Amino acid sequence: MNYGPMMIDIEGPELLEEETNLLKHPRVGGVLLFTRNYRDKQTLKKLVSELRKAAEHPILIAVDNEGGRLWRFRESFTHIEAAREYGLLYDKDPEAAKKWAEKNGYIMAKELLDVGIDISLAPVLDLDFGVSEVIGDRAFHRKPEVVTQLAAAFVEGMHRAGMAATGKHFPGHGAIAMDSHLKEAIDHRTFEAILKEDLVPFFELKHQLNAIMPAHVIYPCVDNVPAGFSKDWLQEILRQKFQYQGAIISDCMSMEGAGIGGDFVLRSRMALDAGCDMVILTQQDRDTLLWVLDKLDRNISKESQLRLAALASQGIKIQKTPA
Image 1: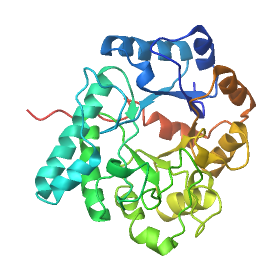
Image 2: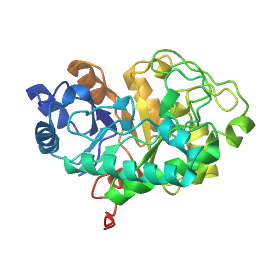
Image 3: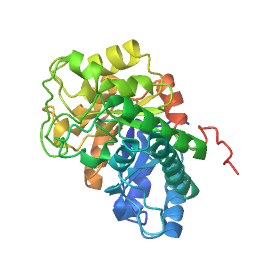
Image 4: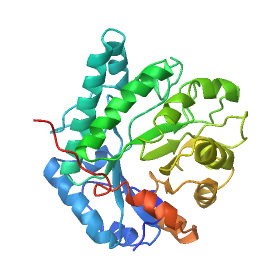
């Protein structure tokens, strides 16, 4: 049985009857959880089990637990600091910062795996240019070489726990003020400038990142559509130039930055055709989700299936915790 090409959400901490039927849809490949889905650890673990049982085919269970303000499950989970805190420590003590990042990457991943969640969509690899409304303290540092080192340590911790890592937002969301959740976002810099800075962490960590999430940002130097809908970015640059072998998972199709002149079906088709292995669509009513799933008329390749399977908690070789 195969993964479907779309990751959806559910409304609350308990699975509704209409959602049980929705999960059985062959084009559902995953569920993205939010704070509204959390009551306590016991209920969350039960919910994750029910999601898998209801789907009757493989699905990925994901959450955005980066640390700092993007921390979906708070009570009973260890709070992890925002990425910028590691960067501030790095400026004083690089080795201590890397050890701290590795430790927290492990803690974050281990606690999520313990309740059955496959992946946290982390870490953020964007550079902290000090202008982005949405990135802010989610970025490790301004310097690409520091972001690379701290992200590598965080990913090492995730891998040690047995969790896949997702780098975002390719090719870099940190240099523009606009929040792509709320409005169209355009980065007018040259490709040379982006290659010299923003793309460095993605290139350097391409063998450690199990998945990459593209930005809903337009970079006119390469294409006139957001990177997540661009064959130039995803196929020519990421796959061919960088030789990236991991999965590509879109950012959410509901975001205003994904508004490319069509409905959710067109957006999803374009993202999959551009090179995404899976697309995310959340924050919509159940009827809209079902309509999109029925109209999507896209399956994913054997290669995509293998890349997605590698993101499941069973797909990462779990390493022993040091004594």
